[in-house]
Structure formats: structure tokens, C-alpha cells
Image: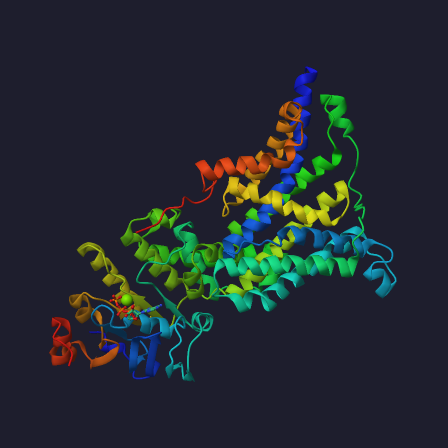
Length: 311
Length: 263
Ligand SMILES: Nc1ncnc2c1ncn2[C@@H]1O[C@H](COP(=O)(O)OP(=O)(O)OP(=O)(O)O)[C@@H](O)[C@H]1O
Ligand SMILES: [Mg+2]
């Protein structure tokens, strides 16, 4: 293979890695939006919060250490963090959503805006605001196998991230397609009234979707944190998820994934190949330009339901 | 015509129900009962408050006054979740199916209240959940056979013709093995043949499973044919209540339907 082509592939692969993370954040959005029509501004902060909790449970001087004099091994810390995210979901339903059931979407959106600040503040108070290196024992550095056999430079972390993302999406797909709760989730997404009439409890469903979104956020937080440390700027990847949603459609799970990949790969390629002509930093605005183009020509996104008023 | 299996015990009774939306009065001081095993029709001109009454019974609407006695327990209002888990299933006037889901999945959602495996357990461990899934699938296949909709099992219901959607919606309600089935205009917009099929299903459900049915319907022929007793609403008030023959002979009912001005 020519080195030109090789470079192209390496760029694409690192784009895929970024794309997987955008996709995961977007997936959290889509789940909540489908089930409750709420645009959850706090999704990015949930990633941050989950990563902070996970780090804290394993760190000397963290809460578990201070309370019980031990630090948790990685897998237990992950289980504990999942527990925390479920409690957070439950509290959000109890303290916020439950009281706003019949309100306009804009009010619910404002509520999640507030929620984002509360969670961020809570994360700061509980876990501190310094940058924390998250080390879960995910292999670092270049994959020797890829280097030797293909001659490609591929980060091991990127491979792990891509595989984890794929597994997570598959498990979620089975969960949604094959179980009663999954079906109930889809039912609620489709028609609230009809769902109520067959005895599905909206409140339970909301706790479940927020929990699942919390777990998806944790996975995204782990990957981002492993790459560049757990820091408060993590909550800003929520902003990158917005163009992903516009591309993929707000209600489409496959859309979130494909949208994430397109933006991840697209911005890396644009940076590498067009960056030099416009002075670089394309990565910062490429996603938004693409989203803008989509808003003009295909506002429902690639996979979103067509916006047609039924008469 | 089904008098023989109509017992005298009352399954549900509404007492002095009044319901209004802002200034609009939808129901005014209406009382009637539904006996176990009967087909009870609710009729009346457009806007009479029929659908509102069904919504009160399954807890979608909360009346400002009155009470509801269901299976011996009296409450000022029902809650949808409580109604569903205590055997009240329903269909809607404007079909409310899960449009993106297949016929099979739609009917499976009807099993929701009967599927009892703990939700947390399900989330943690797929095994038992998948087994439970298979058992309920069998039941749903029976319903599909009963309603003669095998051919559309896997079709997303949004693509089905109107008459078929109505049938699937009935299937979803039946999947709950309800004690009380509320049908809001199950035959509206159907051609003669589809209507005959639907009539047959309703009668079969009532006779074979002994399900009590409350039915809203505009087609007088159908109503008089299949119902045991009829309650008539007009402008939110009850104007008649009795057997089809009694109701047919009632002057107020005739006036209401002929549009005689209300004094
Ligand atoms: N959710 C609601 N909000 C405001 N008004 C309502 C609501 N539901 C019903 N109404 C009003 O209550 C009255 C009775 O309506 P309802 O739908 O119960 O009539 P209906 O007998 O079912 O009529 P139709 O035969 O046309 O279905 C109408 O004036 C209607 O506009
Ligand atoms: Mg009606």
C-alpha cells in the first residue's frame, strides 16, 4: 500500500474512534428523546459525572477509601457507578420529571438545563475539579498487530473503544427488540396514551431510559476519560452530539450511530486534507457546518421520521 | 340475545359522574351500571360524551364529581395503570396503535400486565425474561388465529389498512385477558363485510370468554343486534337506559337522533 493511502486509512480510523464517542453521547440523547420527548441537555454532564464517580471509587482518598478504607477494583467500581447512575435517574424522575409531566417540551428542556448545572456542581463538590487520569487497564499505545501485518498505526484504545461501542449497541438492540421492557419502551415512544391503556407505567419507563442513558454515558465517559483524562470539558462533548442528532434524526438509534461516525470521520478527513488551505481548526466547526447544511436540505435527518402533518 | 349468561352482579357502576373541560361540560350527572357478562352499548349523537365516559372508566379523565365502583371498590376516579392491571382493557376511537411496531409486537404489549417477571430482574438477566417471552408469545398466537390475522403478523401496523388496524387494536386489548373490555366505535369507517367480521369477534369474545363489554357504536343496526342493554347519552346527560327494544321505543331517544331542539 502506498503511504498516501495508508495515511488516509489512519485518519479514517481515528475518525471512527471519535465518531463512536459522539455516537454514544447521541445515543443517550435519542433514548430519552424517544421515550419522553425531552431534549436532555444534561447528557454530556452525565458522561462527566459517571466518569468522575468511577475514578473516585478506585482512587485512594476517594469516597469509598475515606468511608471504608478500601479502594474498589475496576469491575466493582463500574458496577457501583452503574448503581449511582440508576439512583441519579430515579432521583431525576422523582424530583424533576414527575412534577413536569404535562408541561411543554421547552419547559422540560429548561429543567434539563438546570439539571446539567446541578450535576456539574455536585460532581465538583463530591469529587473535585482537577483533571483525573482514568486508568482501567485498557491497553495503550499502538497495536503491534496492525503495525506488523497491515503497516497501519492504530491506537489500541481506539480498537477497544470501537468494539465496546459495537457490543453495547448490540446488547441494547436485543434488549429493545426481545424483552418486555424493551417493547414497553418502544410503545411509550410511539404513543403515550395507548401505552398507558395497556398498563405500562410511564414513570417506571422514564427511570429505565434515564438509567440506560446513564450507563451509555458511563461508557462514553470511560472512553473519553481514558484518552484525555476526566475533566470538566468532558461535558462539552454534548455540544458535538447536537450536529450528530441533526444528521441522524432525533428519534433514530441507527441514525445516532451512523451520524456519529460520519461526523467523526468527516471532521478528521476535512482537517487533514482541507485544513492546510484554510488555516486549520476545521475540526472545531465542521460538524456544525454539516448540520446546518442538513437543516437546510433534509431537516428530519438521515433516518428520522419524516415531518409530515397528518390530516 | 345473550340474556342467558348475563348474571345480575354488577361489575362496574358509575355514580353521578360530572366532567367538564374548562367551560365545556362533557358529562353531567350520569349514572349507570355494567353487569358481569353483558354487552353494554353506550350510544348518542356526536359530542354526547360517550368517549369521555370510557376515558373516565379507564382513568384517562378524572371527573369533578361522582364516583366509580369497580369490582366492589368505590373510588372518586380511576388511574390508567390501576385500571389496566385490574382487568380493564380498551380500544380507541382514533386507533392508537404503536405504529412502528409489528402486529405481533403490538399484541404482545397487551400482555404487559400479565407478564409478571420483575423488571430489575429482567434488566439484569436475559434468560428468564426470554423464557417468559416465549410463553406469552404462544398466547398471542392464539389471539392472532382467533382474529384471523396470521398473514399480517410481522407487518408494521402503520402500513395496514384501517379495518385491519382496528382488528389488531382489538387483539391488543384481548391479550390482557380483560374482565371488562371497552370498545370505542370498533366498527366505525368499516365496510359491510368488515363490520360483520368485527361483530362476530365481539360476540365470540363475549360468549366464549365471558368477557364483559362496553361498546360505543353509531350503527344502530349493530347496536340493537348485539347488545344486552343500552344507555343513551345526549349533550352529556343520560336520556335513556334499558334493553334495545325499550330504548328504541323511547321518545327522547328518537328526538335526540332526529335533532329535535332541546328545551
Ligand atoms: N380532552 C378534551 N378537552 C376538551 N374538551 C373535550 C375533551 N374531550 C372531550 N371534550 C369535549 O367533551 C364533549 C364530549 O366529547 P366526547 O368525545 O366524549 O363525545 P362523543 O360522544 O364520543 O362524540 P363522538 O360520537 O363524536 O365520538 C365534546 O364537546 C368535546 O369537545
Ligand atoms: Mg367518541
